[in-house]
Amino acid sequence: MKTSTTTALVLSLGLLLTGCAQGAPEATSSVKPSQGAQHQTQAQALTATDTWAKAAESGMSAAFGTLHNNSETPLELHKVSNAAGDEIQLHEMTGSGQDMSMKQLEGDLVIAPGADVVLAPGGNHLMFMDLKKPLVAAQSTTLDLEFSDGSSTEVDFAIRNFDGAKENYDEHAGH
Amino acid sequence: MSMPGINVPRRLLLGSTAAAAAGGLLTGFGTGSLRAADAQEPQAVSTPGYRPFFGRYQSGIIDAQQEHAVFAGWDLSWREGSRKDQLRSLLQMITDDASRLMSGRGVLADTEAEMAQIPSELTITVGVGQSLLEVIGQGKIGTMPAFAGDQLDERYGQTDLLIQFCSQDPTVLQHAVRAVSKNLRTLTRRRFVQAGFIRAKPGQESFRNLFGQLDGINNPKDQARAQAVFDDSWIGNGTTLALRRFDMDLDRWDEVDVSGRDFALGRRQADGSPLSGQSVDDPVDLAAVNGLGLPSIAANAHVALAKPAHAAQSIHRRGYNFVDAGRSGLLFASYQADPQASFIPVQHRLAAADALNTWLTATGSALYAILPGIEEGMYLGEQLIG
Image (cartoon, rainbow over all chains, first blue to last red; front, side, top):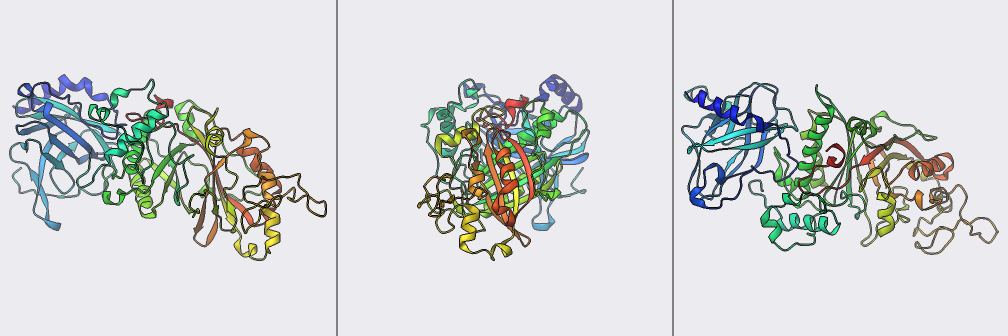
């Protein structure tokens, strides 16, 4: 059921995904400041900074960054997709120290009003489950972030070499 | 705008903008990339401890020399597909890395971002060899010719990409080298990392090389320096870097007495004054004679041969001492608008006859096109690649 929705969304946005302008050091998502807060969608209230994804030829990878909520109501990140049609899950880390493992977030990722959610190695992150195309270092990849109100926004993630983020995958976490 | 726990020096970002504006750069470029909040705030001039990344020229060229440097060279490993596109992506990444590091932030995916804080005048200056100009299909600087006496180690030869890292703090410096190298590693093969150091007296630009000589005395200054480095170069606001590695035979240099050393250089080791004068600021006068009617400065003295025959032969030296695995010497680095008209003919004269050649051996040699400065929102090389 969800798959068909995703596909339609991806097709409608697919033509926009070719940009690669990451030269700006403070690359942010192209969210325009709101004119009237009462008309603002959740997607418009998002500012994403320092967004990057781990380079990988195939298989799993992950994406990170800081998601900021500019509005006075919570943002609920519901789904992440891309033009390649990769399965991308919202993951959270559980446990501590050397015994951390990750599992799919139950429900939406909530960003409190005015707050940041930091997606980082060892913490919450966006997880590519099985890449259909390589993530090549120095290039960038665009993800579509869809919120609970149905609004969505595209965010560029710079692709970087990274040897960390080898967290254990918790096979018993209800997949 | 910030990594967790790292404060972005806001004045710095503004300072860069101010510097770019002062350089007349903003004309004709996308000033729309400035965020509204920045544009409304008063513009600071500069922040102590930070060198601007954005500006008319890249930093690390005509600005004051920092005490520590690393010159690192890479060859690119190409994937299938457009090489120009791959080079663009790579330069975009380096631009992002350099702008973050020079403002005291870690790069993306940095595992030790704390080490980037207090950059201590870190500069990251990017150049490309003729090989990458061919990939771009624009620009020509040529390659370094062979010089008499060269005993080159292939390891220190020409590479596709060259980055000069400089800082007052060697820890910050080494983190920057590692951070940039980690991001490059799957895209390149690193050929050399050459570290150097100097100590200049406060307010002076000359430093003692490992022969004990004052180096950098006759560098062009101020406007003359900018002209020597940038005027009529291969691209507007770009320049070239001649990078040569000279091993010094310090054991045999020990055998030479002071007068012999001064004769070979043409200046006095004690204070750098030319043998044709009394003060370090006196000109090198090749016509001056001593009490015996002989030239004060020998025709094969280093300064006699290095002296520019005319203004177009002027270069700006920004070299560093090195001690590496038991070998010592000078990482000769000079910036000049047109090496064919300046560095190369001067180096041919020196290679043929310089009295110092007895104790000097060139083991590395390369020539790079140094990319023009950029403003925020652009990437290094954008003027060439588009």
